[in-house]
Image 1 (cartoon, one colour):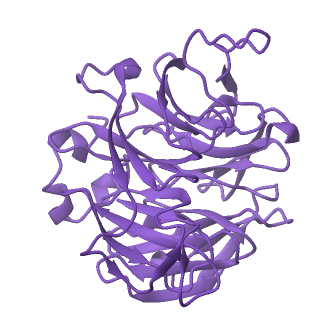
Image 2 (cartoon, one colour):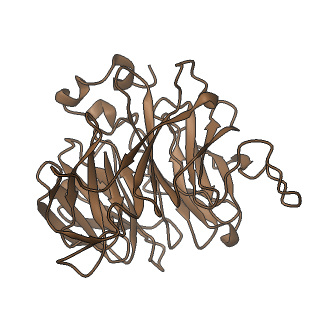
Image 3 (cartoon, helix red, strand yellow):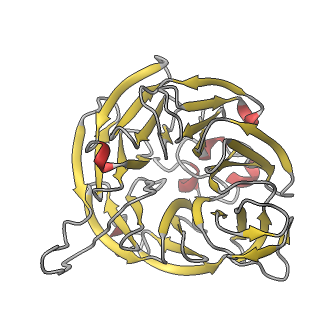
Length: 375
């Protein structure tokens, strides 16, 4: 597991932030990579799972380093405030959302392994944040923060399929998650605490999920799961659950994707922010949740009894993100150790589309179902 501990200050650089690795066999912090990263925000990896791509949100750079050694491979300029990065499954090209862009061409496409910028993609809007890529490389969806809508980009036609309103600029759409077959996707609207459900092929709005539906603002009574100020919101690789980190309520909300109903809310550490899925040994998936204002990573089992219903999801572990005696580091921490949890990355990437492209050494560690989640 990799977590961007964005607030860590070190002795030999002026700007904060690290990529922190957790060994999932013993749950210990195995490495911290600082390099010259300026507030690293989100990460992804290449098809071979050898490189880590990290966006520097308070800068204009994408840093690329070797996952096994922590050594720098490249640091490339992509644009102001790069937010999220993902690869396209069919080509392994990188796509970086440029949150600080004032232009329509606000997603940068890089060559495989991040060697160079190939083009800037016109999504019709400035300022995208946490985009998501389709399982077959045909689609990209972006939440457009400043215009209150979401772009569906079609790579086959090399153009915009739809721009879908998700509540207006005051809603502040900030993150997306997509079903493993790309049939629908979810947009977290940060400032109005809703999630818009959109049919990918048509751009039709299927539903708006109110994460505060069980909260009475007059009496203060809470009668069910609640979430406020939602941020990252991925869908599990098997498609049974959408998990959202809510930074105001410090809750992890769970939506059953069959019904798009809010079915659970779990306690989260202070500053609940990032979510990403990884394979669980023996079958199923864990959701890993980071927090800005706490130095822990939480582990959520989305289906403890294996019945396909995520209503019984549970927090099953908390991992301290401070270094231990055996943690490899390229700098010395002087303040905020383990703090500032932002983007999370599980290696190997086991989402549908990506998991089928894994090297055999990684596939051998997965169950038959995990190797092809929709079969």
